[in-house]
Length: 311
Image (cartoon, rainbow, N blue to C red; front, side, top):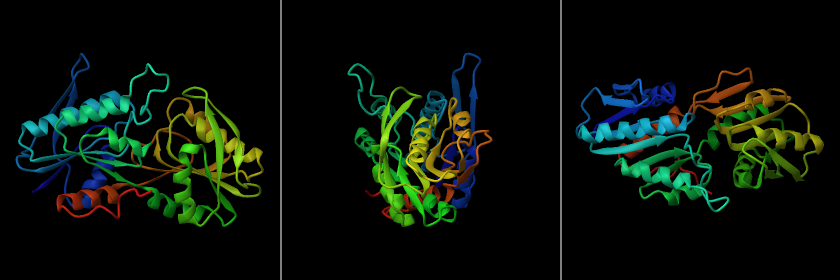
């Protein structure tokens, strides 16, 4: 089957990078908003019998980008696409994976059901907030990892006397993978979340004294977790001018402002979401080759084993 790649509006530059790695151009489509805020989507070329990939991270504004994805899928299916795969480098609603108070919605499951209802047959995601999300989908989910790319990119920035720090217990497995790839020891911050923008730390397990902190996480949203982990590491004797590594750099709300006050010399993220306009020292690593190779292999029905997340 012929491969065709379309992009929503969430991150066109990254989609173009994927297309270049595949040696093709992005499919033509119309994506517009009516005065009443409704989204209108139309594909401008034939996709009949094609293997279609829709690249759209559901980054902020998550609701708008999710609706674009669903409408793109519907337009392609009605135009005769043979197979539909949603490429969602950043999966919004991933943190709503359980009922925290007993009366709240499980947003991640609902979004998974919506994606399936749009006749999408497969999802390609990168470094999900939790592996448990795979169980929410009634369709195959290919879970790629950018950790190897980011570890290779951060190597020149970290001297041997560094330490990989997990900012909370949920990031321990991730930190272990970075520590192994970088050949460094690791430490763990004990954290309690007070609200969506406030966290509280209760000390560090592991020796960080005299070491450069390399704080790793799957995403940077408001920056509260990173700020708390960095301050905890400094209080425990680590060196300043640390490095932060994360797959998804959202930097929402007042995150950029609070993080800018910290002596962090580099934020290393991927281009899974559009980079913010910020004075922070942010460096972006392209996912174009990783996602492009995954699409190429899926199109040929080849194994993705080397590209998938294994824990």
